[in-house]
Length: 249
Image (cartoon, rainbow, N blue to C red; front, side, top):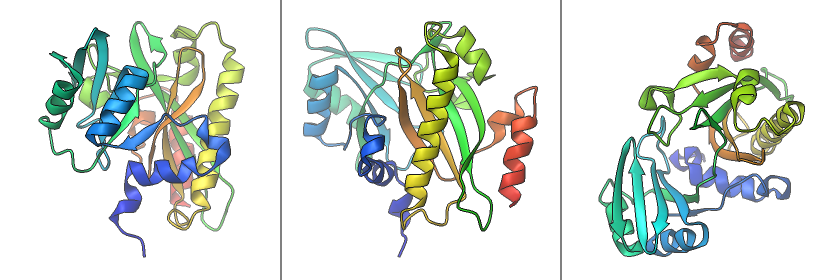
């Protein structure tokens, strides 16, 4: 029987890790414990803690090493510097209830005008069909001083994918290859998750994908009930109309 846990980030991450072809697109992620926090901080020097069941960028916290045993804790648009890993962990725990959180390697996202951006990709299938289709792609640019790209929380912006790639720090990468990889990873993720018992009834996935400075595609999060409002902000409403057509059936 399906229970609430099926909507959590940890459950989806574990399932996706079971598919060999997806592993290279998944940042290392563990349930938050003091040991997991310390292990990943030592290994990557830049990590993110987030609620297992959170959404809209709420409660997301970045911890990065900036000097010998010095760490910056960045939540919303506020930064605090602490000394020592233990103090960093205690500070993160004090920001909220940590009983159901995950800790994850932070991907060094590509930027636009110095601000990190990621992608919201909508993948859908129609009723009585097993065929998944990418119906929409949009770039979300973080607001000034924020680590999250949720446009309401960070007062960020949305851009058509083509425009975002043209303006981004990925000018050295082939845009055609980037788009191909984005579509491939999005469809593969939807097909693999959709074939599991937990998500067999899903007709839509909202993929939050990141591109690092080399153009590699990372699956940051998979949303089971994604908002479509990002696509309404675009001047061209073609993708929004297609998404709504699939949503109706």
